Image (cartoon, rainbow, N blue to C red; front, side, top):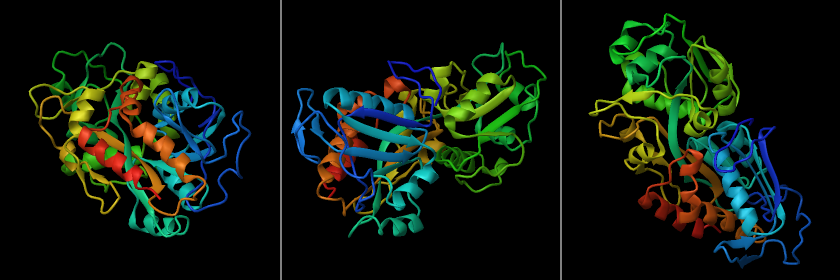
Length: 383
């Protein structure tokens, strides 16, 4: 990802986070996740853990993971802080897409996968081959708004509603001075510029969550099922959230969707959503947390898959409706004994109050307290 970061986050020139520090994980039930221990300045055995002055219980080994580009900025911040607290090792998160991350995890390549959509039943079945005696589960970790970013010089504070967004991305509204957009922005001077829509070309949990919102809030104007693959014809496609945001940034008249962190880092204006609340709702981390707080846990056992349906149709003031939650897909059972302390060390850190508090500065929304408490209990029970 090639972005200018806030809060000291560094830009990447490739779609991966590869940082030398002190953590190494192996895949759940697999011997093929990094080929063993990396050199370390510590004499502590791989897989062991120790308390750190920062309060993090450090562990050694090698972390390989991949998946969602939605959480990349969060992962970067977490990796940086973890490694500053825990001397010398390697962490590698390959940014690809939710779909690719799940494939890698189920092939035994990675310790965990990042996905913006929970596992499908067939993906859970496939995970049992690498999770010895267990299966892959969904652990919510990163919340946030899906921002609708646009490039329309001279137009600030653009307001759209679910129906208008659906018609724009479905090719039914094609110019910026369309009467439906004018009605929502009566004081704006809207040009006759042709609208250029930008969408993901890869299977994406961000796409899945946006289309869940459109299916729920604008069903009459969105004739497609929600899916990770983009269904409408037309528009321009780009790889990963970084690619979509970059294309919007450079294309006048364009509109696209991506996590708020990408809009913030590139100074891309975002749409306010008219939901029926007293005022149109801005895409902010605080407003997204208000939406996510309405989610219900629908997973069973240790699985914490969430239903965000109530957020999509909310009319509550200051509750942003287009939200997603990125899950860390991990084995509930079947972790190798040598890697289990390492897996739990990193996941415990990012689920902690300190880890979650980092999210706001990177454009994400911390998990609501009730959900975060369940997440920590699930991590503690990994075996």
